Amino acid sequence: MSQPNADHTGTPSFEPAAPASATDTVELSEAWQKRFALIERAGGVKMPKLKELNFRERMACNFNLLAAIFGPFYYAAKGMWKRGLAYWGMAFAGILLLELIITLAGFGHVLKGVHYTGAWAALFGMMANRDYYKKVVLHDNGWF
Image 1 (tube, one colour):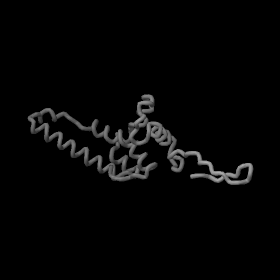
Image 2 (cartoon, one colour):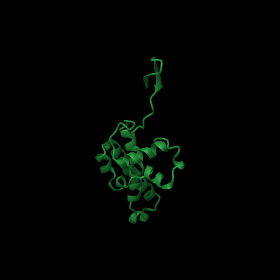
Image 3 (cartoon, rainbow, N blue to C red):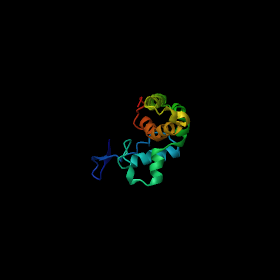
Image 4 (spheres, helix red, strand yellow):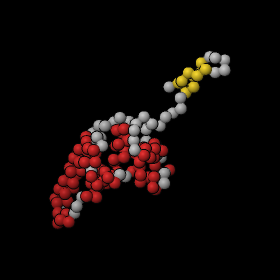
């Protein structure tokens, strides 16, 4: 948006307003402000410039430990219950399908000691920061 300013002749001139950060209008904790700033530096949700960030910054952008631990409950607490349910359903269906395929292939005995906690944690931990960015900044709180 342009702001009218009077120049030295008294006639108004229009200068473009300074671009604001996408997070300026939202009250966020300092940690979330840093994460959102990193996501913006990485090029937004798709993060095409992610490799320009150092390792620590990439981890802060891409992984959320609390979401990895609490999964759909974390999503519900952040107001993203639809996405939490969708990811839970996809993970559950994927695990069932994987077990079915492995059992039908005759390797069911291999699954006796297998736990899927790592895959579960990775799904929620890797998606949480981007999904919260979508919700807060892009106002997209849909199923995916």
